[in-house]
Image 1 (cartoon, rainbow, N blue to C red):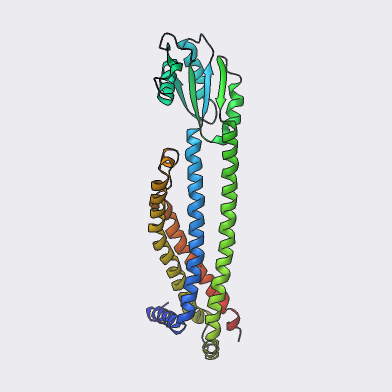
Image 2: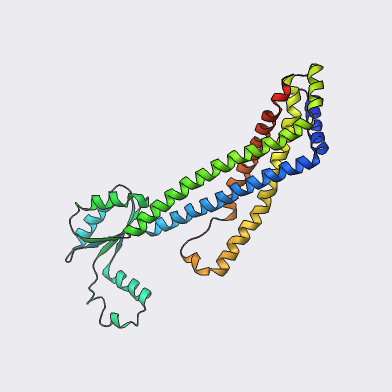
Length: 300
């Protein structure tokens, strides 16, 4: 394709946008609205999944050993636990460490700790077992049944099961939202560009009669669609970035204790995906909408 031809297509594309300025603005607003909704949905779903991952990391299995367990037994049990599938880390917690953690949590001056020291410590030796995924908890618990020396096991069964279900719900609902909004966006861009094409049907018919090829006629409209899609993607994304950062800042200011449990994704982590995805989606909307809208007008 010659540079002069490309220049002509670009010139005609921008010219078509200027001639139908009202429809151009309406198309950009429609694309921007759809991409804004999709970006918002992604921000919510990705942050919820990110929070679930953080909570999963904080939930493990506490393994308490039998009384009279020797140091050799402790190392042997540690080795067996580390070899279990889905186990990522095994941390030994001595009775002294357990007592110190309880004092920090409850307050060292509580009456319950009177008379308790390293020599008179009723707490047992234990391990904190971390898993790769919270959904692997049942499989790991089943594998622990054959390890001798384990007295009892504690784990957040109700919490873990609820988290697995919530995570699956958000993943499925997030995907459905993306698909539905994508279909709506395609329909909007097709209808808006179709009006623009209809207004220029006489021009298209004349070009067909004088021998212009279908792709020669299509390219100016495709460029129009690409420009509309790009602007409709860039504007809401650039506006959304500071809004997202501000919302997180406000949330932390009004509910500061949340930071001790979970963290939101940073603006850069979210929009490193949202920005290119929005640009690609906007361009695809413009191309699909333009090609689909002009198809019947080429049948002369």
